[in-house]
Image 1: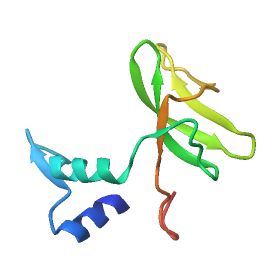
Image 2: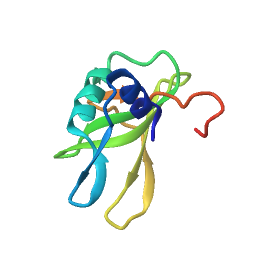
Image 3: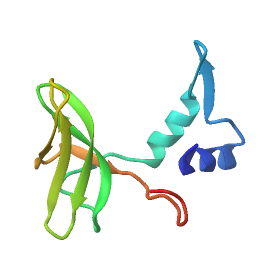
Image 4: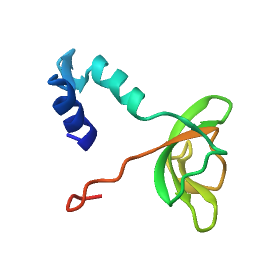
Length: 109
């Protein structure tokens, strides 16, 4: 369970998960709450510090990928997996992004 799930359950008194087709999944109400907490930012509105983000990229279709923003060098670093399941690093601007909140102190990051 993530810190945001814990916060949602504390704030609303509702479970952040539900069972759908025998699988435990995020509840619709939790997803709505989460979207309200994490807003997409335009790439011109840069983070103040280096951070991990989810970036939205247009590669013919819209994709959401993990991206790292390096504030010191003003770089967006994207790890991409190609059709052959090989990983490579791409330095490209996302269309928009949202910051992944850091883990609380003492927890694995």
